[in-house]
Length: 178
Image 1 (tube, rainbow, N blue to C red):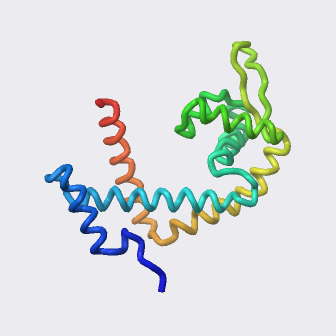
Image 2: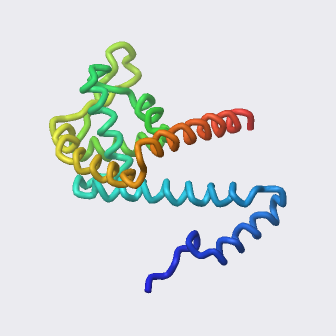
Image 3: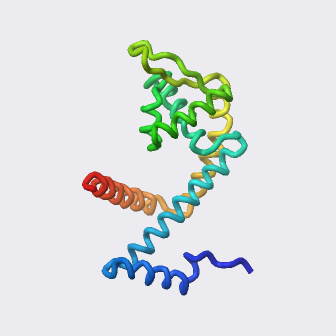
C-alpha cells in the first residue's frame, strides 16, 4: 500500500498546523491548509509541465522562454525580444534569464542580435531549430496541462481563476508595502 503524503495524513497535518500556530496563535488553520494545498498543486503542475517537455530536451523554464519568443513572433509583436522583456514575462531574475539565454544559444535554438535602436543592448530571436522544437512539442504540452485541469467544470475553472486573481492582487499589494 502506498504511503500517504503528509497532506493526506490527517494526524500529521494537524500536528503541522499546531506547530505553525505556535508561531502565530491567531492564524486560521484553513489559511495554513490553503497555503499547503496551493504549494502542492503549484509544484505538481510545474512538474507536469516539466514532464510534458522532457522529450524536447529542455527544462520547463527554458521551454517557456522559447514559447514567449514564438508567441511574440507569431502575434507580430516583435520578431525579437530583449532579455528584460522575457524575464518580466516569466517572472524570473535577469541573472536567471541570462543563464537560460546562454544555454539556448549554445544549443542553437535562439540567436542574439544587437538592438538597432540601442547598440548597447541585444535582442533574442528564435532560430529555425528553435521554432521547430516549439512547434513539435507544444501540442502535447498543452494536452498535458489541459488534462490536469479537466477535473474542474467550466464554472469551477472560472471561480478558481477569479479567486487566484483576487489573491494575486492582494499578495502583490502586500509585497509592495513590505
